[in-house]
Length: 220
Image (cartoon, rainbow, N blue to C red; front, side, top):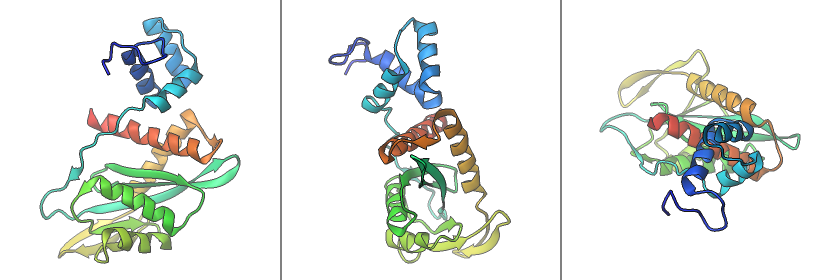
């Protein structure tokens, strides 16, 4: 669709809608509403902007990450608590050794099925072999990593202090600092937008919005 055309049964042209959606990725809906009014004199409610974000989402970059030949690929996986109507849920994330956030999901259970779902999404984003998955020791990661990436994929339990390992005759010192850093970014994002979600669908929507935000920043 042309950016200067109005979508069916909408008052505003598509470029205005897309701009509001991009603003909402980085700001609250109320802040996005204020900017749209003061910059473009567009009067629209925060609720409408939330609806636009669900109906007209910003597309994630569809290119897959192709690592260098002979490069050892490390993934860093972790999960953190979030709340859905005051019930504990789990926000799972995985990033690679280059800092790319590959996937994230929110589930009600901290189990192998959830870890497998996370790793399948990560696998869709990369080209090449995953040599090791670094995590905090949750057993669900062990079977999930071997199921998705193959039995030769090593599971490495590492804390902040780190540990030395050998991969393909190369020595590495790995820590889970990458995961902790990402969790801090997620906490900052949630502080701006949401803490207690109404349902699992809403929680996964905000997780997807966080991934959009990271990809847009990294693409610039």
